Image 1 (tube, one colour):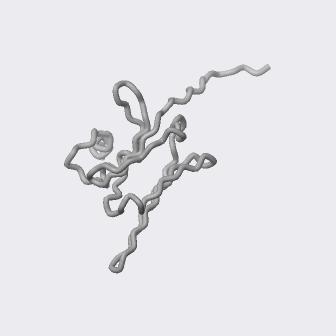
Image 2: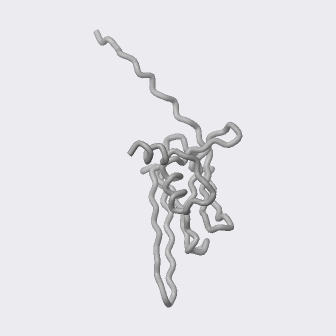
Image 3: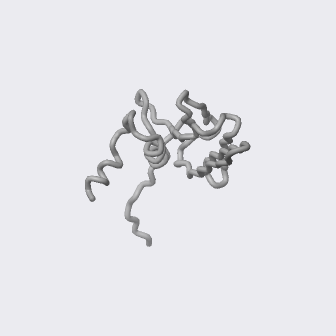
Length: 124
């Protein structure tokens, strides 16, 4: 349905369910604030305490992994999200914090990679 395709590109609304916001951010992690592009990922980890969540990058695979585990006498649940980072994300300056709503925000500077010049070449 063409309407569904258009809806996936709409801005995030405050009343939307956190899983909808998370899916949008995972697919569109480069945002612009005050004319500066940056990496911003928002993940719903409200079921976990901050000390139950780990965030790691892997330079070789260019990935970000967020893992959370909770276990108590009555329940056990886990969360795992592995995301390939866009080229240009400066991982050494990456930060993360929890919002008051339990959303994990991961931010990093973003330097857009140079676009390759596409041109026909005649080879002798």
